[in-house]
Amino acid sequence: MSNKTELIRLEGIKKSYNSVEVLHGVDLTVNAGEVIALLGENGAGKSTLVKILAGDISPTEGVIRINGAEMSELDVYRARDLGIRMIFQELNDAPSLSVAENIFLGQWPTSGKKVAWKELKKKAKDVLDRLEVDIPLDVEAGSLRVGERQLLEIARALIQNAKILVLDEPTAALSNVEVERLFKVMEQLRAQGVGMVYITHRLDEVVRVADRVQVLRDGNSVLLDDVRAVSRDDMVTAMLGHSASENVRPTSIHGDKIALRVSDLSDGSNFSDINFSVNEGEVLCLFGKIGSGTSEILECLFGLRRITSGSVEIYGGGFSPKSPQDSTAKRIGYLPADRQRLGSFAIRSVAENLSVSSWNRMSRFGFLKKSDEEAAFATWQQSLNISARRGPGQEIATLSGGNQQKVLLGRWFEAQVNILLLVEPTRGVDVGARRDIYEIIRKQAAESNMAVIVATSDYEEVVLLADRALVISRGAISAEFSDDLVQANKLIAASS
Image (cartoon, rainbow, N blue to C red; front, side, top):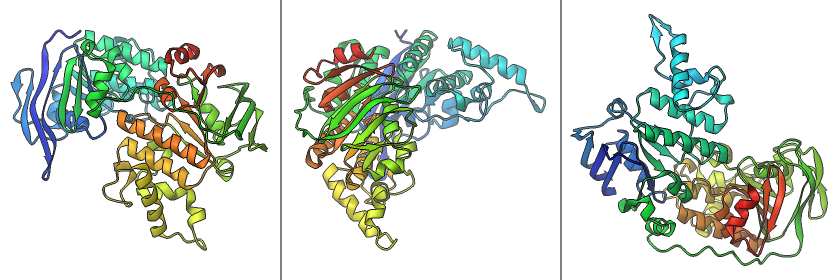
């Protein structure tokens, strides 16, 4: 718990771009040894506020006090000198360099004109020992798991004498084991007096790690309280501006025709002897912890991973997917968990991203009209409520996470797939957009008789989305739920 020694205080922070004010007098205080959870939907102002905290941008109005002293200005270099560090969701390391080299990235100790390798390794080991993390110093950072690479970034921040850490969605791509390790490290940092701002969309984590919770909505601070005094419903209501609907299992309206069946499916390492079927119009969730085998099953069905034994049937016919091209030819669509790196073409327009899987159908004599792409995007923009203010030519990377995901869903709807495979479809998406996406998936499944299979580690996603759920634990099916999906405790117990 915080010892209440104030590290930084932002008072009355306003920020305008041209004539548009995006922050309207927001306060933020970070104390030593304290974690403050900063919540809000995409566009609420969180990123703008922490960029001001880190010196990336300057406020239009307001006061910044660090260690009690008012700062006339705060740029990136001054913020770093004062011990303010950002840990982003996207990794910011050098994969081909060693662990030790990454910890000192940009500031290797030298002796004369040479790198002092012995000193570098000793200090790198010291900081890893401080974090109670056992990672070999000489291995390449790119060979590590995501969670370990994220801990390297925290180690680098500590080498740089970090006093305040801003962690932006740090658990989005971590397994449960890695999440627990991160939380343990955060406890150690708290004990060492480091103040932390923790940005997340996972509300269950707030209770686990935070001392206080602050919610932004539309550029205003609408909730600030001790985390023990705030319920989950309080947080959701503050973010949305209205009460969230209760978790209600959706009514099953799927047909009786089996779209896909797998029998005794194995990949030789991640899962084995998997048996299930999914009907037209049905949403089937494969629920399990990250690393349980759920995503690997879908990778096999889309031809991204080799099937070592078992069989797959599509509408009663045998199917052996050897590549994504094999699967798309069978009208199977797939969205990976990492939409930015593996799902989208970041520098291409929203219209191109939405229509790419339909180019063969849309082209005439080998030529594709830009107007056809834009017409396809216009159709789905309205249907899926995609917010792209600059129109069909706007780069997809400039959209919020929820809107990017809607574009990628529209890609497969436009391609008229019969079977859609989704891995963690709302990872990094805010509360409001999550519910939009659930409604979109269920509506499209019902209206087009599309079978949907979702691999997810989020039990709320199962409750709100699935007609039926299979729990995958250690690569095997451990339970099946339908009528009592709403009992999340059963899902969690079966996945352990």
